[in-house]
Structure formats: C-alpha cells, structure tokens
Length: 215
Image (tube, rainbow, N blue to C red):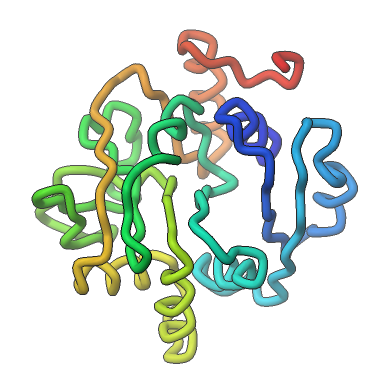
C-alpha cells in the first residue's frame, strides 16, 4: 500500500518524499530503499512512539520540512490528479488545507470516517462524532510548517492525533478546505482486508491503475 502511495506521488510529479517509519520500519526501508527504483528520493524519519496517535508521526518529520508540503496517509489510495491542483492551492504561511470529499461516494464506513463541516471554504469543525457535516476527511493535506507548532502543543498535553491539531487550527481560522465532489476522483481509506479487496475490484474501472509496471 505504501508503494501505491509512492506511485501516486510520482504521477503527481512530486519527487521528494519523507516517509515516517516505526513498526517494521527497517523492513520498509529495505523494501523501498532510497526511492531510486521509483525515480524519486526517499528520506526516512523515525517515530519511536508509533503506538501513539498519528500526530506523533507527523511531528517526527518536522526537521525535514521547512516549507509547504503535502501530507498523505499510507493507508489511503487516491487518484493522483487530486494532487495536481492541490500543490498550487493558495494557503497563507500559517494555514493548512485539507482535501474534503463532499460527494462521499467512496466512503464505505461513514461511522468510522472523520467528518468535516465546511463553511465558506474553511473547515469549522472536524471529528468522527460530528452530527452536522457536509464532507469527509480524505487524508490528503497541504500543510505549512505552522502545523508543527500545534502538534507540539497537543503532544505536550497528551493529545496525540492529527485530527486534534487540525481541529485546533480550524478553531483559529487556519484550515482551508479543498473540496472535491467529482466521482471521477477516486480515493479510499483502507482499514481492512475487505476494503482492500473492494479497492482492488474498483480500481481497474477508474482512470488510474495501481501498478508498478505503469511507469
């Protein structure tokens, strides 16, 4: 699945990746190497506290990221076309943007999905338990280094998830929404083997093929 994400990144013409590793990190590094076999460059950040929330993993990459960057989840597959416009999406130096699926065609477990409420192009609330929402978190972000300041503060007070820091930024009017409602822009959060099989069955029907032989 990580290889699938790398292929998507390559197709979106991004060639520098920082990969955060923890559990089985050495196996992952041996398999992916320095990225040269994919035509990209991979650097590795180590998260020794990988049992905590994903916000800790993002924070572990801070020394590698001094300018705006795209943040991706290793268990999300997506059409790389999504990233072409996102790369040039306008955010201020203290803002971030989150891709929000407002059509929600590819959301197969709405109870587990991280829900988002968007008003006027800004995220005003985010969380799994939202009662009022008009989109779902796609796990694709455009971030400024400002996110690390929020992550540090939340980690210090024992809140380890990325969502908590995104929620804090939203409350301070620092989270833009990059909304997608086009069915052609495939994406899926894969949490189970059943969802993996669903993705494998659907992907050949999409405009994008997840195959290492494609490039």
